[in-house]
Amino acid sequence: MELPLFPLSTVLYPGLPLPLHVFEERYRQMFARILDGDHRFGVVAIVEGLEVGGPASYQPVGCLTEVRQVRPYPDGRLDVVGQGVGRFEITGVVQPAPYIVAEVATLPEEVGDDAARQAATAAKLFARYASVLGELAGEDPGAARVPADPVAASYVVAAGLQLDVADKQRLLVARSAAERLEAAAGLLRRELALLDRLQVAGPIRMAGRFSLN
Image (tube, rainbow, N blue to C red):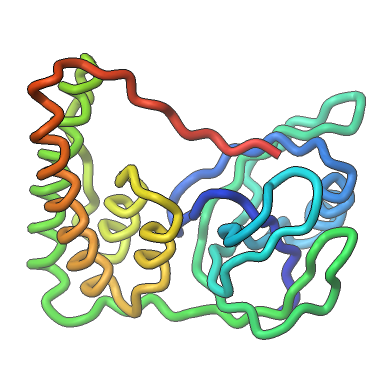
């Protein structure tokens, strides 16, 4: 299918929300098309370049996104809340400008072998990770909620990890939930080892993440 693409400096996962502030003319045009159609677009992580202004190179695998809420402004800007609903791989570009339209193929969501055990391991590590982040930020993070379903759990854990875009992308492209959960568990162990060293330094201010365009 053909899909308008929104390159961003973040990775979106299926099941997760994405707030956007749309102000560039090219993306106003893109969302006019989206809202007049099936309310779907693709989010792809930027490899090189910026969200705003000129062109950017982007990853070949992204997240199919549905528009769930729209708040228009009189000057044409939009506040949009999207939600990831699946993954896709780009097979070709049919329109490079003013905004990108690509031909994409959806990717299956495979559970994989031993996914339930991998999900339980990742959930325990993620609960500890969230707790340590809360302690370092001087906040109460509450209980980390990870779904029982391995596919949903794999994306919730991946989204909750504070990683660079390259690591986030590797989790997105994992072939199965079991593979993603195993990789996430390894990253959680790595991050926990680093956070344990930081705990002696006391509370720190953790930066939040919000995508703008």
